[in-house]
Image 1 (tube, rainbow, N blue to C red):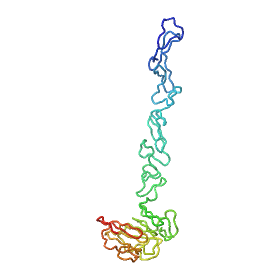
Image 2 (image 1 turned 180 degrees about the vertical axis):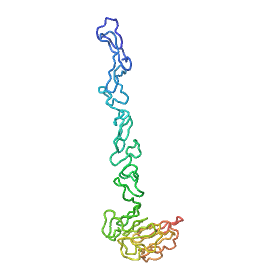
Image 3 (image 1 turned 45 degrees about the horizontal axis):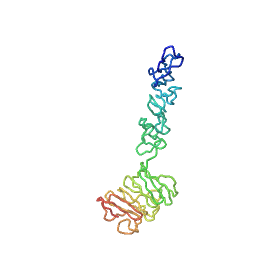
Image 4 (image 1 turned 45 degrees about the vertical axis):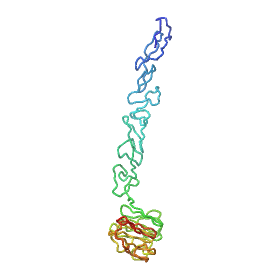
Length: 335
């Protein structure tokens, strides 16, 4: 501000400011004296959680540490505590919004206030919020650190049930092998291919009767077989051509043991035949053989396993509807 010229000659409020507004210091601005005789310094007024401040000749406010003027109005001062506000954490506009959680602010840093129902902050990091689904996590089931036993699933925040290890689909039914060794099947069941002792169709999985040590499951058009951990094989369902391998053509509604087979390491089901890879590398098949799919040099169906001719080094089997192929140890394939 410029002082008036000619002391005593100026009338009130005739003091004229210069070209640039001036701050007397960081908290005061310069203004004309009331009698017009020169200028004086006027303190800038403070506000809630703030002190007065002068910038470019104009009064404003400076927020105290830990507060922010987030609405831009000096009238209500620095209205936000940035040390605790989840919407303005550390600074105005810095929102705490962790995943699957209600955010909180502590000492100006975002934290997880409360996890949403069914979620947990199991790694202790606020950056990814409540990252764990406690309803389905087998290592954090229901709460952080609660681990289900090997092979047991977490369902609705509780350990229980068994994980599905293998799935096999037949003509009109499907089966799943659980980690417990049990097998569950569902779908069309007129021939007993679901294996629960009935011929009633099942719209949800039902457990196969008397089977708790399955290591593999395979299906045909209307039958199912399972390899047991012992190497034995059991089958159930439709049996017009001896596809169940127990020496009969009688349908079985629960598992029956395949005759003379105790060292199977893999099984494979065709539409009406079944084959097993033995631990020796030999392959045996049984069931329908009109097209020679049993591989024993004939077209006669067999109710019990017969050995595939000339195959001693098989390492993998795969069946089609009416044929079978094997991968040999050399990498060659025969069908």
